[in-house]
Image (cartoon, rainbow, N blue to C red; front, side, top):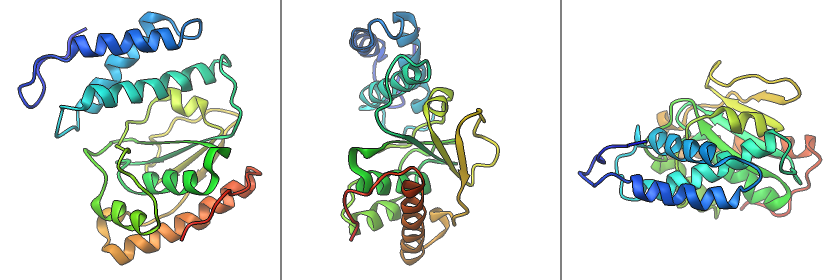
Length: 220
């Protein structure tokens, strides 16, 4: 597989991606085949590269994204236990609402749930206003980035929460589907984003209660 030159004129990252594939293939030995691992790694890189404005760290992000996708794939096949409920949050760009919901859920529930987020048309980065209002609540988004919606993470989820992405999310039997009607932070000032943040927290607390998950902390 080839990926060509990066947007900044960088040499092809094929070598880096092949090494990432080798690491992940070793990690998932007996669960996912080497060819599948390599395909997911290169697919993940290509998907992230479509919207990336800076490509220097893209191979590392692709490896992180691929690792999560491969874990989800193994879970959906019943090869890896799911010790806690899996929640997937989906919005259009994965730059605002779904990122806020995922971050708030992690903050409230800790390791009592596993959370993923994705976008049907992911943006190149998180909305600055979203980062700001979550920092006000003591939540750090510095390690997060928009990710495309993939079939494997939907299959692995126990609860799928959509936020304005229409019919983009595939439906599978046996899953809890929710749609939260929330204003788009991209169209709001900071006060408006704060209101969405607080509304999301109420929704998350109810979802955790429905999943019989006891919050382990509070949000200021």
